[in-house]
View 1 (cartoon, rainbow, N blue to C red):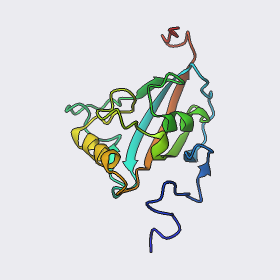
View 2: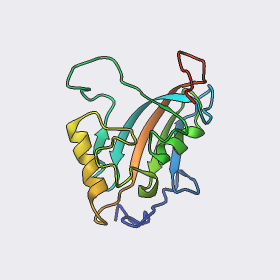
View 3: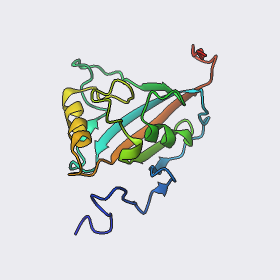
View 4: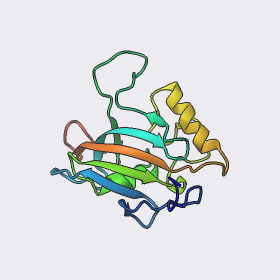
Length: 172
């Protein structure tokens, strides 16, 4: 009953309160930012959390988790250059229309997620920072047709660095 209307376990579920992009990525703004918007070649700095939709909403990355086995009060942000292919396509597409300071939920379908030939998440990120997070993500990605592989990312766009700003030098 709780899953009725979500087309669960089908290639693409549509969530009614999310904006649906042609690629299958869906997003919902929790807070619209007021700063700059990223462009191809900009470096973005984000804070993120990741959840598996088809594996009981199990988190594979949490903001308040222990990072690197140390109890650190500092947040480890994810930095990537828009358009360089270092993060999954769905996350990049979801961040492209955000503004600095914005918070967004991004639903990434399997077709825009982690590639099957990158079992250790070394080619593209983001990569979970804990063993249990990696196991949860791997369980979903490696399950062939049994569960929904859609991922949910909660993203805050901390800042956008243009080439030449804040020590960011664009390498060509």
